[in-house]
Length: 321
Length: 285
Image (tube, rainbow over all chains, first blue to last red):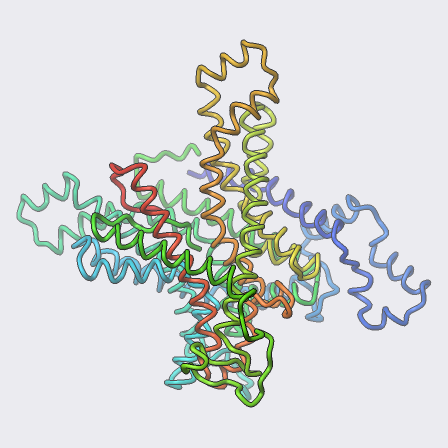
C-alpha cells in the first residue's frame, strides 16, 4: 500500500509539471499582456521607456521556457508570485482562504453522502415504487440543474421569503469578529446547495449498488436465516452496495471544485474557488496559475484516495496499480 | 454534470417518456428556429413602465428589470446557448475523433504519449480550465466555444480509440492492408466510418453539457457579452431583481436549460435500452 502511494505520488509529478507548462503556454499564446495588467490605467499614460523598464523588471521579455522555469523553481520554494489584485502574495491568499473552502467542501460532502445513502437505501427497497420514482426523477432533475441557479433560488426562498438564513458572506455585515455561531449559520445554505448538487451521483450509485446486492446470494442467505429486514438491508445489502460509492468519494473532486466555483461565487463565500473567479475576472495570471495547479493536485490526490479506499474496503482488489 | 441517459422504463412508461421527450425537443427546435424571424415584438424592447411585472397572460414569464418580455428573452437566450453548445460540441467531437483515431491507428509510442496527454487534461477540473482560457483570451463568443471544446474532447477520444482498437483486429482491415492500402486510406476509408455512429451519439449528448458550461461561464461574468445574452447571462442579470424578491427572471432561464436536457436524456435512455435491451444494470451514468 505504501509502495502504491509512493508510485502514484511520483507519477503525479510529471502531470503537475505538464499542467504548469500548459498554463504558461496558453498565457503566452493569448493576447494577455502582464505589463498592461500590472500597470493598470497608469499604463495608458506611461512612457514607452517606463513600460520597457517594467517589462524587464517583471521578466516578461524572457522567452516562455525561462519564465516557466523561474516560476516553477520559485514555486517549489513556496513563492507563488506576488503582483496580485488581492495586494498580497499568492501563497498568503491561498493559505488564508483554503480553510474556508475545505470547511464548505467537507460539509457539502457529508450532506451528500448521508442524504444519498439514506435515500438510496430507501429507494432500493422497492425499485420502481412511488418513493423510488419520486426521488430518482428529482435526482435526474438536480443533475441537470446548474448549481448557481439552485443557489440563487435557495437564497430567494430561505433568505428572502422565509428570512431564516443569511443570504451570503461569512459573517453578518458590520460584524468584525468571526464567531463560530455566525459562521455556522452562514455555512448552512452554501453547504446544502453544494451538497445537494453532488447528491444525485451518490444517490444513484447507492440505489444501484443496494438493488444489485439485494438480488445476490448472501442477501438471500441472510433472508433464509430469518434475519430482520433491517439487518439484511443495512448489514448485508448496504455493505456490499456501498463499494462503488467509495470510489466516487475521491473521484468526485473535479465536480466538487466545479460546484464550489459556482456556489462560493453565488454566496460570496471567502474561499479559494471564489478567489479563482475574482482572479479570472481581473486577469491575475499568477493567482490563476497557482490555483489551477493546486486544483489539479487536489484531483490527483482524490483519485489516489479513492483507489486506496477501494483497496481497503475490498480485499480482492490489490494495491499494484 | 449530467452525463446523459435516464434510467430505462418499461412498456407504456417508456413510450410516454419517448413521446414527451420528442415533443419537448421539437418544441424547442421550432421555438428557436421560428420565433426570431416571426416575432412581432423586439426582445430588446425596453418598456420601463412595465418593469418587473410578474407572470400574466400578456407576459407569461413576466418582464425583467427594464420591462423586456422574459419569454422572448428566454427563447433568444436558448438560441444563443444552443448555438454555442452545438458548435462547441461539434468542434470537441472532431478533435476527439481525430486524436482517438490517430492514437489507436498508430499505436505504440504515439498512443502512449497521446493517452497520457488525455489523462493529464482530464485531471484539470473542466470549468476551471475553461475559466482560465476565457480569462486569458478575454470573454467572448469564440473564447467560450474554444474553452468548452478544449475541455470536452477527452471522452470522445477515449471512446473512438477503443472502437478503433476493436475494429483494427477485424479481418477486413487485414484484407485491406494485405491488399496494399496505405495507412491513411485504411484510417479514412475503413476505420473512421466504423466509429462515426458512436462519435455522432457522443456529439449529440455533449450539446447540453456544453450549454451548461457556457451558462456557467456567462453567469460568472466570463462568458458571452451581454448584448448576446445566453441563458447564463439572463440568470446573471436577474441577480439584482432576485435580491429584491422577484423570482421569475431567475427561475425561467434555468428551466429553459433543464427541460431540454432532461428530454434529451430521456431519449438517450430509451435508445440505449433499445440497442441493448438485456442490459442488467439499470444505472447509466
